[in-house]
Amino acid sequence: MARRSDYLVIDVSNSYAKLAFASRERVSNPARMPTSELSSSVVAEFLRRRQVKKLVVSSVVPTKNSAISKAAHNKAQVLWLDWKLKLGVTIDYPKPQSIGADRLANAAAVADLYGCPAIVLDFGTAVTFDVVSEGRRYIGGVIAPGLEAMTNFLYQRTALLPRLSLKEPHRAVGKSTVEAMRSGAIFGYRGLVREILAQIRAEQFSRKKVVVVATGGYARLIANQLPEVAAIHPHLTLEGLRIVGNLN
Image 1 (cartoon, rainbow, N blue to C red):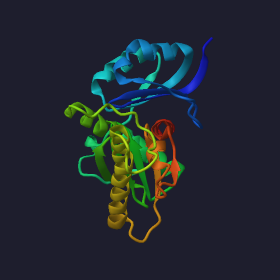
Image 2 (cartoon, rainbow, N blue to C red; image 1 turned 180 degrees about the horizontal axis):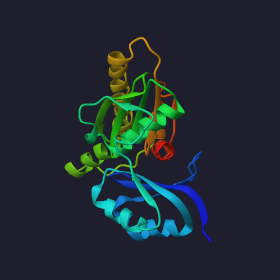
Image 3 (spheres, rainbow, N blue to C red; image 1 turned 120 degrees about the vertical axis):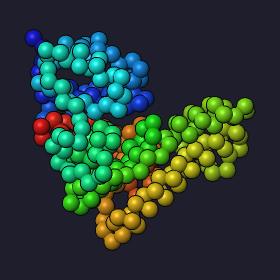
């Protein structure tokens, strides 16, 4: 007989999908795949491994939602994360239905795990900054191009610049085209993140302590060298799904 878990949590982003089993207390190590490879048979295979009470899903790719629903049919309830659920934070935003489900999951997770006020940096296809005020209110954020999107754009739109593997540069002044691009990407990106954080702080938290938590694919590479960042939590979005599962 299959083992039991409280939840199968699924985060479907533009580039990658993550799936993990979770209890009410913790999330197990996730599986990660390109979003293009997520199908009903993939989800069904997970559901064969363990019996789950509920799938908790954040999806910003609506075309993948039917595959998840099909796999879960008659096996488990699907909880689609949106602003109408209990999140542990209130939404102070003019059009709450326009907020990405992953951003709501991040807000729920940071409020529960780190306290408020808080800013979540999520390094994905885009880098998002989500702000939760001291009253546990989600008040909005910032969206900027992702690191990979910026470097791929250079490669695609120039005749001579190569595709780049992203890692820490040895120095600011590059001694080759690749070194120069890497320096521009990593140091430039840190500068972007630092400036946006400074603007948010000045506008919202001028005399208050605010906790900054980073998550997503390039969190370690970029945020490790940023003293403004208090913690790096690779699977914060999945933790948010677990927390929302508990609340609902």
